[in-house]
Length: 81
Image (cartoon, one colour):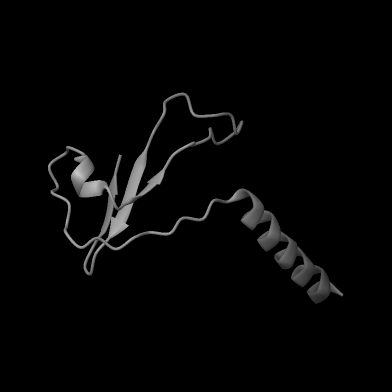
């Protein structure tokens, strides 16, 4: 009985998480971005962009608009914000 309830909970949890948790495909970059503190559009044009962040407790939109650029290559994962 406990195992059945646990399995149902896990299955429902996965369905619930998939309905509220965004999924992003992270592209592979052919050319590494220059790590200089500046976000150049040409270096990040193929990256995924994450936005529409929410406040943790209230789930209201974040006070400040934030964009996060995300990509990877053979050796690194790149984030810029």
